Amino acid sequence: MKQRGWRVLWKHAVIWVMLLWVLFPLIWIIIASFDPRGILVSQSIIPPEWSLKHYLDLFSTPTQPFGIWLWNSIYVSLITSVLAVLLCSLAAYAFSRYRFRGRRGGLLTLLILQMFPQLLAFVALYVLLQDITKIPVLGDLIGFNTHAGLIFVYLGGAIGFNTWLMKGFFDTLPASLEEAAMIDGASRLQVFWLIVLPLTRPVLAVIFILVYILTYADFLLARVLITDRDLFTFSVGLQRFIANNYGTVRWGMFSAATVIGSIPIVTVFLIAQRWIISGLTRGSVKG
Image 1 (cartoon, rainbow, N blue to C red):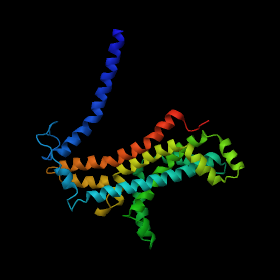
Image 2: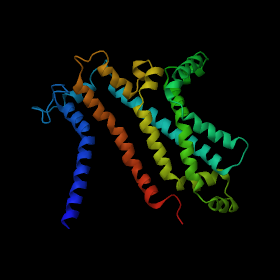
Image 3: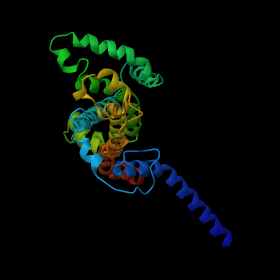
Image 4: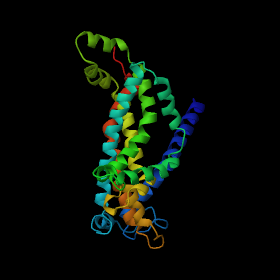
């Protein structure tokens, strides 16, 4: 009994050490956001004074439109995630249920493309959007330095792996459910929308969260393809707080911005987590 107690104590000690290791940077940033001195490295766990100064200054600095940057990231990530889930589900369903020439080659192509680092495509994407910008009307919609162009680039990187992931989930669904619905008069689109998608909500939630987080946190693509200050995304805007100003940087405002910027990610995860939990505990098919 004593040996078992020591074993439980050791496990709890390891868990608490890992939790502190993970939570310490978050706690440090939160404290820095309420410290009016605006320091980060030399601050204490309990600052001598607490203030909302940095949060108020964050939205009152005309040269740093943080609210616009935050909104840009939210709606770009949301549109990208919704379109990625829709396109991936359509592609995965076709690969899972239909047999056509080029099916195997298409799947292998999607898999191979994911093996190359995204950095290799930066120059090609930059040149492509610059050429699209020269096209009348179309260039103003999805050309260089537009959110629509950035969304299309994000979609190109999100479809490959997520299509593979969703196809594996579709393969586990019994085809008899769809056949029974089609016998009753349902069309293929109705079967897909009313039967298949409700059964695959867990994987849809996972893909939505993954795409949303990756898009929301992206810096390199947004920095290369967006140059207008009012079109900056959240991560690019944060970089403006510390660019070329490390000595007198406003770490307090930077910390406040990171705290506020984390709210959309946490909110999306809390909303979608029940679908993830249901997928892990009950599975995708109900008998």
